[in-house]
Amino acid sequence: MSATFNFCAGPAMLPQAVMQKAQRELLDWNNMGTSVMEISHRSQEFIALTTQAEADLRQLMDIPLNYHVLFMHGGGRGQFSAIANNFLGNNGQALYLVDGSWSSAAVEEAKKLAGEDNIDTINIVEKSNGLNSVSIPELSTIDKDYRYLHYCPNETVDGIEIFDTVNSPWPVIADMSSNILSRKIDVSQFGLIYAGAQKNIGPSGLSIVIVRDDMLTLPSLPQSSIMDYKLAVKHASMYNTPPTFAWYLAAEVFAWLKASGGVEAVEQINIEKAQLLYQCIDDLSFYTSGVASLNRSRMNVTFQLVNPELDDLFLEEAKLAGLVALKGHRSVGGMRASIYNAMPIEGVIELVKFMQAFAKKHS
Image (cartoon, helix red, strand yellow):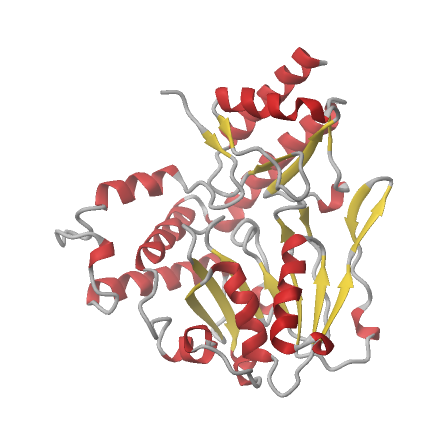
């Protein structure tokens, strides 16, 4: 069977080595004669797994000691609610920067919980010469006492990524669901980082929260216990039964990343993959990108065929070539190639070859 390269935006492909190890261990993990899915989350063996997982993530991201690492339910959307509930009590206000679909969704969830009057927004995407680019305003000139500023540094639907630091007078909360561990960041610049696991970490249903100590002193709204960050810290992410198999796979992905040279090494590969694909798009008049070069996502490469009548044929022939899940999000159309950490450079090379051949055949 020839290789299939999965460009799905999420749930996304996992590293092949991790999947093969999970397959070998599925019925007999840690020589226990049972699956990791079948043992107590409070057992000595599973606690050892979670301790190692946190240590590996702390090392990979160089997380300071005054930050807690939580493994929580609900994915990114669950954290949209949790953030507002945990930090916007006593009529607290927050500022949301909007650069695409997911940051917009976070705004709507926060408004439901904290009220319209307590959530301010700034649209930071502007269009010039038909291309979307990000422009972050001078935030220090805003005379308001916000509990936090929220933004999404990588928008999977729109293919927009923010590489610049957001200089904010208020704690910065970042939705890194689609670019966590893809490049080196300074964790100390953030009050909280969260990420749904299903793109660069593991399967869906798990979310990672990295929260600074002082954020936990903010007043909260009434909320469910399982999304309470203070309770999650107190109970080491085990106030209730966590998604244990997802946690196990995340631990294996962290170990794989360490063995691959860490975040610095994988960042260089991600740069190379993105450059190969964007160069193909730019070199061929058959394709076009709607994102300015400085804000082109390394994780989610969105592009369009100049003749959209060929979209279905492109997807059909790509699938026959072993290149799957390239259809753009239903809200924007076109194509999207998600090339997270687990996507080998060989997959991008094969996609580029296909795009070149398709353009030549149908021009």
